[in-house]
Amino acid sequence: MQLLFKLQIVLHWLRFRCWPGDPASRAQLEARQRRALRKLLRWLRRRSPWYREALAAAGGDWRRLPVMQKRSFMAEFSRINTAGIGLDEAYALALEAERSRNFSPTLRGITVGLSTGTSGNRGIFLVSPSERARWAAMMFHRVAPPRSLRKRRLAFFLRANSNLYSSVRSALLEFAFFDLLEPAEHNLSRLQAFQPDLLIAQPSMLRIIAEAQLRGTVAIRPERVISVAEVLEPRDRALCARAFGQEIHQVYQCTEGFLACTCRLGTLHWNEDLILLEKRYADSSRTRYFPIITDLTRRTQPVVRYELDDLILPPEAPCPCGSPFEAIGAIEGRLDDVFLLRDQAGALQTVFPDFIRRALIQADPAVEDYQAVQTGPDAVTVHLNGPEPLLEPMIGNLGALFQRMNLTPVQIRPGGPLPPQEGRKLRRVSRIWTPQAD
Ligand SMILES: [Zn+2]
Image 1 (tube, helix red, strand yellow):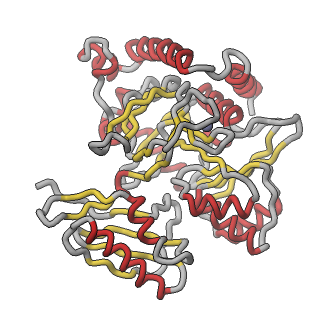
Image 2: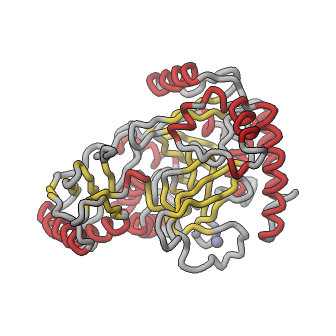
Image 3: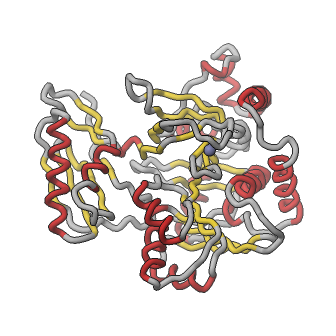
């Protein structure tokens, strides 16, 4: 790795850690956010053709800028980004990287990544070397703070490697990338040989490792286990905590940025020094919300008032850790992960995934590895890796839930074992049917 790049990581890390360090109070945090936002808006006016026009149309008021979603964000990709990169050339590079599984080429020095779309809606993201350095420094600072000068081994399970991640190689860290497309047994034996100090993987993979650890086919003793990419469910969290003998940390990050991570008490907090958070409430009681984020640091591909399709639940009580960053109670999965079913009056009703999950796991303590898929307007399939007789009470519970919600009868079918999830994020509750606009 180039010396200059390493130096950048160290400089960013010193800023996060020592000067100015983490904000001590909400007031200090908000003052910093305002400063960072002014800088971002100046940059947008100068460098982003799309935002120059949008800001002019909004009379300079960022709150009146349009809220973006993946579709609109991609439609304006070429004029939003400040590196002059076209969508076609970016796609071509990202697809070629996926095909060849060589993720090192860049476009005019810019790393191009492809995000996993949940509904075939794929996104492209761009990151410059200095943004990569900042990201790596922030990860060190928040997720894997060094405790000594001893070199640590980091095992990272990923759907696809990317420059973004391989940048974390340094004198203090030995980094091993594990490809999720490889068979699990292969990865497990590599992991056993590698003996990581830090283990980073998505929950569905952590689960496989935890089960192997409990069986004794793998014996590793990581000092920290970090869950990324998917929603970590309480059940998976408990299993992993038991297998590794520690609290499981979480990083909530997506192509749109490093959004949140757990504090020392295991509570997720938004990284509000990096992002500005707005909320679109999903219910009339104003509890659950879809986050609208503005990334205060990214410049190559500005992320401004970008709405995520993750549903956030606030915590039941404030986190006692004292962080000025707002806490997250739970991440409810993707927008696709709500079921849309008709009530007796024929109107579409949303069934939140936590209700579906609860109904299914409450059928039997042995229900662990399952998936419920809405396949049509009134059709749901339930998959289970486990004893088949369990499917009957699961289906019964789900039917009872729908009845309680006064929905029209739904056909719930047993679907056998989980379909292969290779290269995709696992969603316990998924909807592959989309209502047509009437
Ligand atoms: Zn906390």
